[in-house]
Image (cartoon, rainbow, N blue to C red; front, top):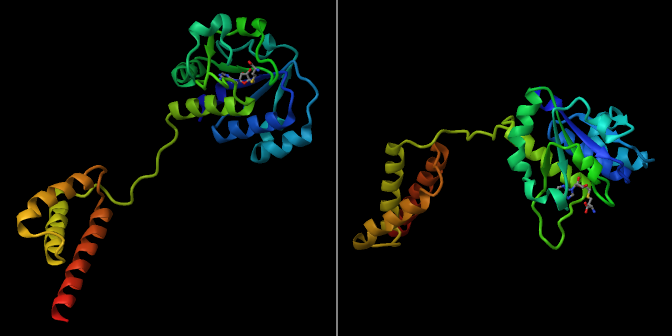
Amino acid sequence: MALLEHIRIVLVSPLYGGNVGSVCRAMANMGLHDLAIAAPRPLDMDEARMMACHAGHILEGRKEYGTTAEAVADRGMVVGTSARGGLYRQQAVTPREVAPGVLAAAEAGGAALVFGPENDGLGLADLALCTDIVEIPATEAVRSLNLAQAVMVCAYEIFTAAGTYVPPEEKTPPAPAALRERMFGLWRTALLEIGFMDETKADHMMLGLRRVWSRGTLTVDDVRILMGIARQMQWAARMRDEG
Ligand code: SAH
């Protein structure tokens, strides 16, 4: 999706090649491709390539900048991520809250999400460059996520907010009322015939079953299966009575 092309992930001085590779993988999963490394340190590139797996192109295509300021220089919105909050704690929002704004900024020119080093996170100078601060909700006991997992949570929220994911459709449409009523009729008869209930309890029991089966939408396929079961119960009851 074109919008996602205008969102840059900036890693500030990451320490571990494995994390950088995992960040590439998360980005590829979520449709992001623009990776920048600010103030790079030597990385174990074998480890990075191994973890990037299907996202080697993002790893190889990364841009490197001397400073964070240079990595975000052409971006309107700059989102800093921090588990510590500190001075910025009160204004921190969740990835879900920030995602629509990131997409709007991407449309208006460009956005960057900035992630700190594994050992000490983003420093004040880097946070000062940011227009927004995101904190991923986590337990008080362990508030800090693994770097690549923090990137994944943010990228996932942006990807889903972009609305590009369309859940797979049911093979058949919701069953129309008339078909559902035929199914309930068959079940009523079948449950009487197998002796599960008698006529005096039947209406009550059928209301209960309607309630159970209306918790989710019954499709035409669902109703056909249920009708098949009811017919088989009726057949089995007749066999029993004849035998
Ligand atoms: N010890 C560091 C944690 C660094 S984790 C600290 O206390 O800040 C590496 C990076 O992952 C962080 O700089 C941040 O960019 C991101 N990150 C980890 N946990 C996060 C959280 N709960 N919310 C937002 N970003 C987080």
